[in-house]
Structures are given as structure tokens and as C-alpha cells.
Image (cartoon, rainbow, N blue to C red; front, side):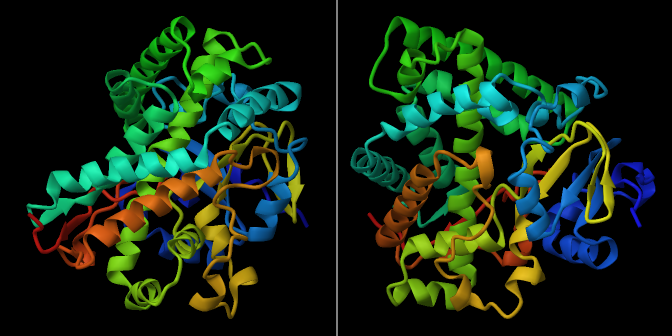
Length: 405
């Protein structure tokens, strides 16, 4: 028997992913979804924006590895969504690898992959260490800091800007615009999208006139011959993947170290920071729900009919914690386990994951080495999480430590 499409569920029965209640405890929500709805759940990404949330690991693998039936092109869907929709900037069609299929996806991905692979990993590590040291120097004498805004974000911003050959002034506008489109308020997201477009266009123009040894210049010089519009949208993707998720990966991992004694004890006993990162990516990834596809016609997935041209969203957070694949697995089994979906799989696998690992690992190592007596400055229960259907993001990470003059 085929179950009616999740998209046909009434608004009252769809789970809202955009409110503060969901942001405060998404894992409890995933457990209720699994118990009451199964692996394919009718949700709202914003008021009146239905989608199917995939919370089953095997179902997600099937979808992510089947771009023919689950293409990433949203153009038909977005014709039905007003421009004022708060999640539209995160989902709308752009001429880039993330939102394309077939030959165009191949062309865009080849340019991105080649430009990223040319980054020297040793130079990248040295850059992160330099930026981290400068950030720590700004607050180490105070004995307290908000690591989210004073450490994680500056590292992600400054390192990515350097990799892309982007001056700080342009990069700050890009970063601010990107942060705004992650928010769930329509006006904020729309202004962020406009700010982002203008800033990346300025960066493209600058590097066409003054090429350098950077990712943007290599994209421009690639045989794919990307035009200015295409170039801008490649950079939107790189910034989208490189600032918000990376900021949150660093912050969420530091939080886990500060609040989980077993976790921190493992690091003190010599457990690599890379294993700590993978534990967080497995259990509570910073980009919790994304990898969106749009079936071109109704598709039956294990007896559930998914509607044509309606978003199918992969919950990396829920799929990674699917009891069907994690039953009986403890912390030791998850340590260093990279079978999670947090970098996606299939044709849209993140091409910059080695860079992200290196940046986050180096940033956390520098912080712990410089401030070994770091503590959370408030009860964990008082920390706030930013609402939004896609990210797992703190609004602050206050810490204290012995001041170092």
C-alpha cells in the first residue's frame, strides 16, 4: 500500500522546522518524528512551505545516490514560492554545482574541484595558525570571551577570504549577507541575498582585473570559461559552505569538549582532534538539514509517495543517528567514524571537506594549546540556539579562563 505524499499532509500535521522550539531540542523532535511518522516526514521549512524531511539513513543514501530521480534543480518549485519566502535564498536555483544536474553540474563541479585542489595544505595550516593566534591575542588578557564571535567566526571569515583572494571589506559584506540568508525572517533573508549578490560581483570584477594565486582567480582561468554571473554563484556556494557551517563546526566541537567529560578526557589522553570533529559531525552536525532535491514526478520511496517538484530535504543530523545503523554503537564506536552523511554523498559530495577538516582541527588545537583551562562561562542550559530549518547554530559561546598577559 502506498502512503499519501507527505506534501499532501495538512499544515496542522506538518512539523515546523523554523521555530525556536525545534531549534532548542531538534534531536527530541527527530525522535518523535521517527516514532510517529517513520523515515519520511512531512515538514514545513517556513510557514506554508511544505517539504519531506528524510530521517532514515538508508533512504537518504538511496536519494543522494540517485540524481536522475532526485535532481537538485529547483526551478519548477520556485515558480510557486514568492520571492519574500525566507528560505528561498537558501534553496533557489543558481548556476552552480549545488543547484544543477547533468552536463552543467559536471562543468561547474570540475571548475570548483580543480580550483580547490590547488590549495596548498601546508600553507593553509600556517594561515589558520596565524589567524587563530591573532584572534586569541585579542582576548587572552581579558579572561573571558564569546568564542563564537571572537574566535570561530573570525577564523572562518579571514581564512576563507584569504583563500578566495577577497579583501576584508568585500568579504565582510559577503559574510554578513550569507549569515542573513540563513535566518528565518523573510525581510532579513531577502536583504542578505541582495547584499551577497552585489559583494560577490565586486569580487569577481576585482579578480578579473587583478588575478592572483587564489581560488577566485583559478575559477576565472579554468577551461569551463565561467561568465560573471556563473562566477558569482560559484562564490556564493563557497562562502555558504565555508563561513556559517565552518563557524558552527568549530564552536559546536568546542562546546562538546567543554561539556562532555568523557569527550574532553579522550583529548587529554591523546585522542586526535579530528576524531572529536567527526563525533560532532556524526551526532550533531552544524548543517543539520540540507542536500535538497526536487523529484521531477511523484516517486514512491518504500511505500511513501513523494510529490513532484516539492523539496526533499536530507536530515544529516537525524540520519546519522538513525537507530537502524547506530543501535549498540557507543562513543568508542563513533570515534573517528566517518561514515556519516554530514559532507553528503553521491555527485554533490562536498569538494572542500579536507580543507574544512584542516581549518577546524587547527583552530581547535590552537585554542586548547593556548588556553588549556578553558571553561564554559554559563550553564549549558542557558545557551541559545538560533532558529532556522537548516543549521545547528549557537547564538553565543561564552567562556572563561585564567587571563594571560
